[in-house]
Length: 247
Image (cartoon, rainbow, N blue to C red; front, top):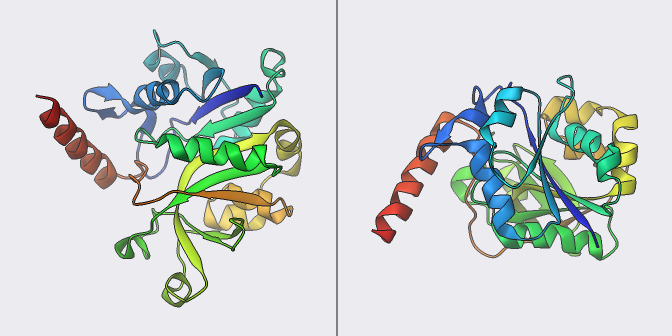
């Protein structure tokens, strides 16, 4: 199975201004994510899909492709679908999308999402342990899964009774997706769904069209995405602890 990894990076992020270019331990965030994608060794080719030439410049020198995409795309998967449709990338069976705010993505998240697609689903993603303190945090996306590991609901806010009730599994959603090419070919034709627009969650477009989403469940807590100034400060502190351990 030929796997294309695409990292959609949008300069105009609303929660963290110029997010792909913000420095983490002295290096642009998008560059750190690109290097992480390479280090996972799960894809045959890695592409950074950006809306601004400055993002392209930020990954110069890495063994990744960097392409400018339509600045009008509303979400990362729109950008990924554009890349997948280009002639030079049409030979890939599966497309793995790693969000450009995931510098600490665990390998199990990527392989788990891919395994859901290998098992027959059109779309796979991943989730990890949800901390109680994150339940009401609107920057932490939650996913409710059934007994077969399929997503029932994605939301930024869930009732506490749902999150901690018996028989319901609520996870911290991780920003990684594995797509069958056939799904991406339909994606742009659908356009945004009403619930996608209201929640600001692109995966709801697939659920609106009754696409089953398989969720790989990771053991233990996961590092959050870098979505806010607080996240960036906490990630900087975490990088500092890693550096201290190697000294």
